Image 1 (cartoon, helix red, strand yellow):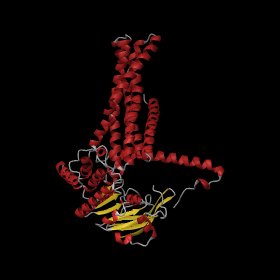
Image 2 (cartoon, chains in turn blue, cyan; image 1 turned 120 degrees about the horizontal axis):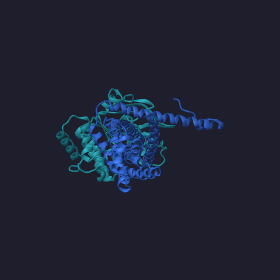
Image 3 (cartoon, rainbow over the protein chains, first blue to last red; image 1 turned 90 degrees about the horizontal axis):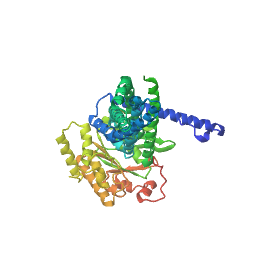
Image 4 (cartoon, rainbow over the protein chains, first blue to last red; image 1 turned 90 degrees about the vertical axis):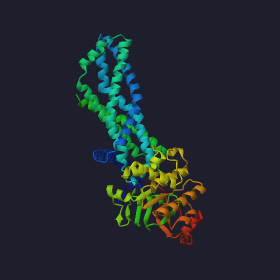
Length: 268
Length: 250
């Protein structure tokens, strides 16, 4: 049986090169595992049996339980935007454009990104911890020996729930944020409501909405994918679960920002 | 019948199983004993298809299971019931739902029939009326009994017990052992149990296998194993510290 040379077998000057090689192989291997995990999940998503009960449970877990934080952060994001953009625009006498500026910022960028980051912190971390604990307490093994596929039971419903819940949550975030901007701009700073919504109607078009929804859909896939993967591949004990949860939140957040930039540059 | 032939498994540089052979007859209670970290749970995981060996074979009747995947492996597993060391009960479900889970997922039984089967199993393990509780609300001994009820609810032909009495007091150990024997008499399944409980397991086993250093050092009826002249077996049975150190567990 083949076994790779151990650290001691390399001459001293070559050891850093060997270490770099090992690290590269590990990175490529984990990227491969990450990709295969996703492809497997997609395969199970489109083939029966479908777990409808689990899907509804996951929509509740990812979407409904995150509603409070989505509404709260959406409102304050809109209010902060309303205040800061109003103060900036008033320097140029262009306060009339507050409505479209708030709406475009929220719909194209901040709505999908902030919503995804907050839901990652709330539901994504819980998803990783739940699956990680199931792994270390042999609950995933129990599913397997009952001849049930853990991917079908734990991963697929989370992925589909993400695809359904994220666009809905982003919509709520956007609407609440726009009303937050309205509260500050119109009710506190005296802009006319007709100007706020009228200019918004003029400048925000369907492609802006679609940009936001494409981002929401892709984040709805990225967050459950990363979080379930990290749960499935967590280390031993409480420390392993804690590390996996942290990695899931950090990796999801980074991927959200990277993918946001990529989509922002290719979508109209 | 389960036949293990020349099973080898290593984790990294560490060999755990080194060409292990073992036959388990249909309908018997086979108890596998050995030092902690000696590879008992690793062997069990090979028998239930959770690990693949580096070399060797596991036959369940005529089917070689180590190379099976997907539905083929599931078909073999449908004959199994497994009681995990910690119970492996689903935290998010009640005791009743835990026991009902395999029936809901794998059988075509109606709700009333499932309720009847689950109530009957809970009654057989002495937990009648406890179905509404969550696993977190019940004691360790009760959790083991729920795990046994869940493993038996599909009426499997082969039941694996991974240290079913670990962490329990001596009275509960005896209670669980008697429960297993009683259920075995009633349902005639093949029982494969990994255990540390010496001398208690000599009272319930049909045969005992002593795992040491990655191979079966001794196998036979309890009296024969107790009378074995193999020093490793004697050291282990008497709990003497001179026994050769076992490999660390994975």
